[in-house]
Length: 138
Image 1: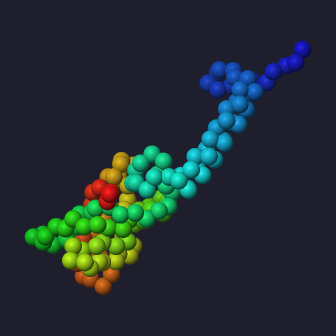
Image 2 (image 1 turned 90 degrees about the horizontal axis):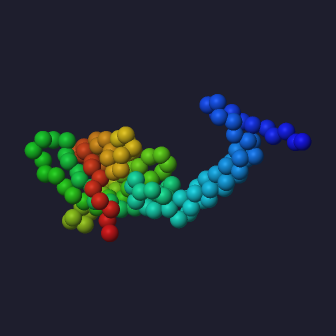
Image 3 (image 1 turned 120 degrees about the horizontal axis):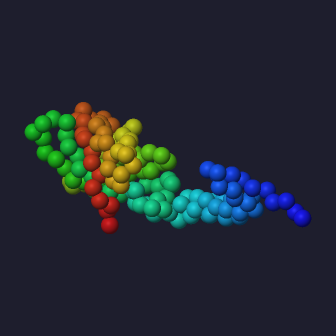
């Protein structure tokens, strides 16, 4: 008679062969999921199956640091590079643009599209802006 090996979890005996079935099923699923998100994932912040690295456009709100200044809703290039999101450039309604360097968003408790609003200064300018992401440009 063959003796079967058991693995004990919280006092529950599980045959080792069942553990190997789970391991050999889960590992390929994880590898396939990784490949899918690298090559064919969504380019939308916080979406299940989000691509790991990409650049896309979102509407953002720019709130100048000075109190009585005008707010702007503009299109921006946002780059995701695991695990961060960066604001690269905003496009002004008059046709110009401003480039940003080292302007990264920090996730707020992992909630969808909820970021701690960074204070960023465009290259070559003195104005600092609080930035809030709105919706993806269609």
